[in-house]
Length: 147
Image (cartoon, rainbow, N blue to C red; front, side, top):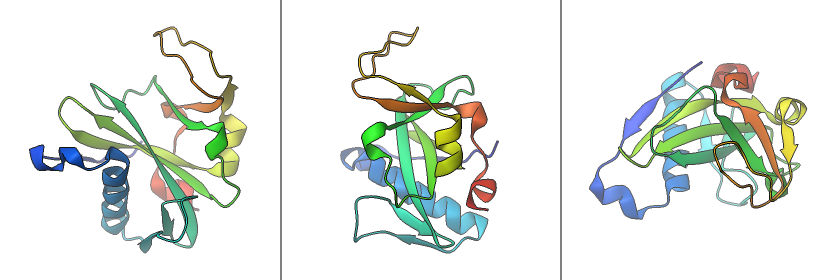
């Protein structure tokens, strides 16, 4: 699994975490040598990478990425135009982002379990809407997801 972390100082706390994750994703794409463009004309996806529309999803917790955890996409956010979902963990304790991996949308939907609103995880987490859930260990590198 490919991981990438970046730390942010006190001054960035006021900026939305999702926007920062998109910025981190763009940095990752540049680092990996991919042509990437931030999408400004739609809210349906965040970036276009190598011609693929990518929706960047961010999960917040106090410890970063854990392979036994899940990543998720709200059912209402499964947009027909999206080609790839990319996932970041944001550690609210040390303000760091870690790229967890990505999946092409068809593969995400094939592997995902649809969890209904009101369902509760063993950890006590309650889903507030219908949500597609995939294990972190099922994610792929950015390179694999963009193929």
